Length: 203
Image (cartoon, rainbow, N blue to C red; front, top):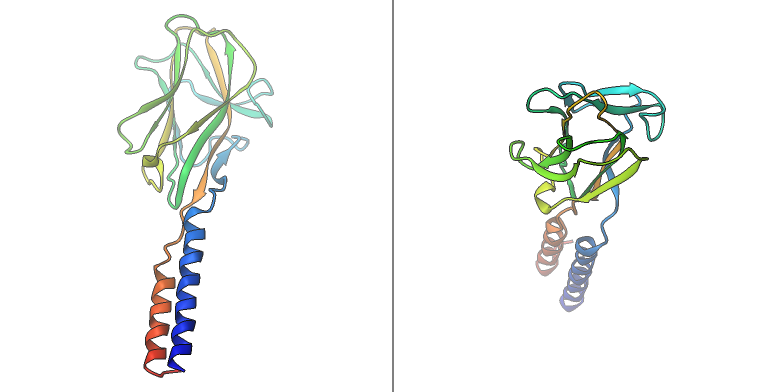
């Protein structure tokens, strides 16, 4: 009988190992961590200064009726728009948004998309400068592991525009990733306790 229960326990242990392997190597799903089309105005977690606005205009929106708008001239040091987006419980993150250069950017005009993992050091994702007006485009960035499960994750758009004829729009922001796998320690602990009880002859 003891051999029987030992074999059962080993079977359960092997099953736990197999299932834990499935948990750890299963493909990442594109779960939505956060998204906003600014249809209700500035979303939670947003901060801004200078001439950044949420504008109700079909020309400023990629979808819906509102989009984020920036126009020059910028203040000294630039006008900034921030999004504070903690990524607790998520990994393999992707950040994306739609942008449109509404009026052409000349030499010296610049809008930079940035991110930070510590709330202090800003890293560039994309820079828009010396570009003619155009239609909406998707910008998509796979973030490094330092963005995973991070309470200090933030994104920023910094505009340094020379005049009132310089203009950009942004819309449909989205942070996506995969839920961090649950630890399988509890599974192994349960199997070990079961084996111990069976060896002691307990029900």
